[in-house]
Structure formats: C-alpha cells, structure tokens
Image (cartoon, rainbow, N blue to C red):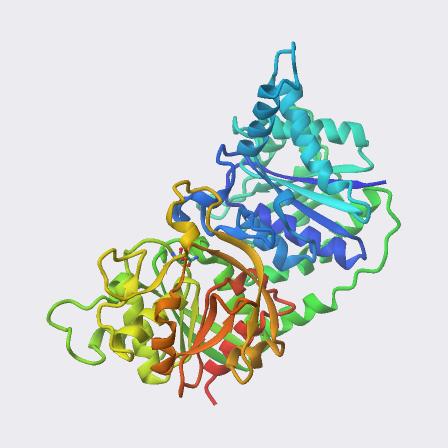
Length: 540
Ligand code: GLN
C-alpha cells in the first residue's frame, strides 16, 4: 500500500517546514524506502518563474525546465527523490486545468465548484506522483499556514486523502512554533491553537514538530501531547541547529522515523545514517577556512541565492573546509567618477580584503551590472579564483571583451541597446518572444567540455548535463575575436553552436558557466564545480 505524509504548518510562516519535510524524506530513505516529494504553493501564479527573487526567493529549476519553489531545492539536497514539473503544485495550475476543462466542455451541464472539482484536481495531481509504480512514501508539503484562506482547498484534499487511504496509510505532520517570551518562559498556547485549527478542518495530526530555539523538555512535550491528542512519542522538538544538515540526525535521535513507520504499520528497517553523520562531522570539524566573496544583486534576501549558498557549503564539506561568505552588493562596487581610471580601485581592494575567491551568481536586469564587471576584472588581474554562474559568465565575457579584446563598449543586449559590441545577445528565436512565463531556455541539456580545460578536469567527463534558465547567450558574431584575444571556450552545446563555459587563460581558476550547477549539488555529494572552486580557493 502506498503511504502519504502531509506536512503542514501552524502559528506562522517561515518555520522551516520545507527543511522538516526534507529531513523526514532523508530519514525515510535512510530506512530504505523509495520516497517522493511534492510541494504545494497556494498562490495563483502558475509557477514561480515570473516572481521577483525579493518576493519569492530563488526560482529552483528542474531537469524538465519547471520553474519552482525553492523548497524543491531542499528536497533535492536532502533526498534522492527525482524532481520534475509534477512535484510542484500551485493554485494557479490547479485552477488553470479545471477552467480549461470547463471550456472544453468536460463538465457539461454541471456547476463547477471548489469542492469537488478543485479538490479532485489537487488529489489527482498528488496521486500522479504517489501512484508511480516504484514509490513507497510520498511526502506532501502544504505551503502557507493553516488558517490562511488560500490553503483551504489543499487541506480539504489532504483530509479526503487521509480518509480514503485510512490513517494507517496517510498521516499528518504539523510544524508549529513554541516561542519563549521575555524572561525565557516557554509558551505552548500558540501550538495548542494551531492544532485546534487543523482539527477543525478535520485533520488530527499524528506528529508535531515543535520549532523552538532550545530543545524542549519532556514536561512541555507531555503538556502539548495531552492538549492536542498527539501521542507523546509523536511530539518532537525541532530546535534550532547550527547546520540544517544536522536535522535528520536530530529527528532520528527522538525516534520520529520509528514512530511514523509504526503508525503506518510498516516493518521497520535499520536506518542507514552514515552519510549524514559524515556530513555533520565534516561541518563540525573543518580543517581549514575559505572566504568567498559573492557579488550579486539580491543580497538582502538570503533565500534569493539559496542553492548557491548551499552548494558553496557543499564545496566546503568536500574539501574539509569551512566556507565563510562575504556578501557584496554589486552596486556598491560601481566606480564613482573620481575613482575611475585607477586600474584596481580602492573600493575593490576593501571589498575583497581577505577574500580567497569571488563568485558572481545569476540575475536579471541592469542594476549592479557594472559592479559585477569590476569584480570580474579584479579577480582576473589579481589571479583570484572566479566562478561565474549564468549572468556571472556573461559578465566574465563582457569584462574580457572590454579590457582584453579591446571592444571598450562591449555589453550584453540585455543591458545596452546601442553597444556596437553586443558580445552577449538574444538568439534569433528569442527576439520576438513577448510573453514572460516559461519562455527562457529552461531545463537540463547536454554540453561537451573541452579537453585540457579546468571544467573537464572538474567533471572528468566530456559530456555533462546541466540546467539552464536564461534568455541571452554569448554571441557567435564575437566568439572568434574573444578567442583570438585568449578567452577559452571550455564547453559548448554538442553541435558547437552555443557557448556553455568560458575560462581565462593563464589564470589559476577563472571559470564561467552558462548553466546553474548549484541546483544539482548535495551535502553528501558536492557538485564537482563547487568542489573544484573551493579547492582552488583554499590557501596552501
Ligand atoms: N539575465 C541573463 C539572461 O537572461 C542571465 C540569467 C541568469 O543569470 N539566470 O540570459
């Protein structure tokens, strides 16, 4: 029998439901089960693709080119569950399907309603994942907070599925907050209310994950258990940890996996947690420290580059090094009139003092672009390792074109309509595209790495598959000139038509990639490019 685990949140948002769901996924995998993950986002956008990083954080891209919520990134880091379009459900998608079916005449004669038509469509989408032949356990995270208007149809669908599957096959995990008020007193009332709210919808939670600063003692857990009808064994303390990758071990130590499996009547297998223990061991006892300057444009919001931060940490784990992040808003590096002209101005020196390597991540729009170009120039001239991702590679090309290939007004067509040297430009087929949603080059495709390049050394293979999310490409009209000036085209599409990676000549490690390697990195298996970048940054 298929098993479902619904993960919901109470009290307030940002409690780390995604990490909780991911940690459960990791534990179920450690127990030998085949796990799938589903994220439900109760917004009307069809996907996250058109949302600003400030609104939504990073847009996580799957192999099949879906632009999804960043929690799918967490699932990808904690579990081996394959992620594609079907693992991300939004209100927008659900309504779009139902309304299209209504227009097509599928409901002829009937009134189309939230219940049953919307809820049926939600259930259909969940079961599309859960019913795959080899799947044992599907974990469904319902975004938002119980009590929000937007999540009502999703919770009703969850209630129905729990009823239809039976409580031994479908369980509810509720993540709530247990705050401490001034004076340090710990308050259980918000959790009691949050559970009541879920019960009113008709869902009795089986497990409570109590988010708090410090670990909660048995007395508090007993109190919450007695007020909520959740067995004591199911009341887990999800206290703050230094590194999120400790959580599978923290949960396991409290027996959550055994409890869930017992509830679901599944024969318990021994938990294989060796890889997680190794990760935590390395995070806790690094042999060295590496300081990485990340020069981006959405620096105030940590979530905007979520996968980049995590992939850097993984690169550290792979090298036994602690990665310290120096977040630099690229606008702050832009030369003001009286400092221009000096080859490496003071501002760059100050910003990068003590930094062992520079990473320029992806981004859209012209704000802060010149600051990134400055950062790339600094890294190139100073022989500092540089890793450019997507926009970061385009920046590397623009900088090289301007300062080495002597095309002083070189730019990307995204930022200048008048440049004589659009070294980065739109492909023919993109020029007339007017719509925004889902119109970029999206998803995984093959690239061929060049023999003798740093990128080939990092991967060890000629053929690589990485995920894209961009409109612009290095222009073939300027490729020869850039190469003649020394820029190394280190990877291309298999037909050789599009540049997928560039490297600086005579430089310790200067690599730009047109794709997003950060999406495929894991704590237990760092992405080869992040591992190689951190290795290059490590001080001897
Ligand atoms: N804005 C650039 C483009 O569309 C880069 C996109 C990105 O960094 N993801 O090509």
